[in-house]
Image (tube, rainbow, N blue to C red; front, side):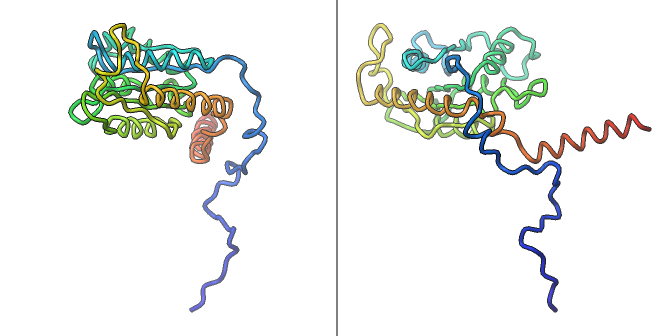
Length: 243
């Protein structure tokens, strides 16, 4: 039995009203922002001499030299996820900073082969959507970790998974500082080393990706499935009003 042939471009399941071809102008000629790139930095330890905080502060200095506006969130006092309502001042501060940001840096110690609970709690308090707006979607992300022993990549690998889950654009480069207790002086400044050079690399790359993507974020994250869903919801509301 021979089945009737169909044109190769026949797409009967496609919603033609919501399907759009690629717009080169939106990709290559968007209106460009003139303000400094806005970078939020999160770290994952509350110790008085926190090496993830020291590495974050060192990275922040590099970002400022590159022209970014940087804000570092202090996780002290942040409640455990679901332990209180989202109107807690620390939670509101974190969410407002995420909305403000165009790029982020997450830096965690590796503890028991994983990121710390403090690091995860901060990410868990960032919802996928907030009042119809996603506070992380389309933002660039750089991931870093500090190690108490030999170099490892468990924490940065986990942070990459979370970045993808939060719909962020995680840059290819990353930093893992081995034996972090040897890499900072008494004043908390990072010593010259290949580890320091890698952090410079990562911040430089983050800036490039942020400048490249920030004015295209809305277009890059516009999804066919969400346009279809939104159109269906509008149709339902209109039909309900006509009853």
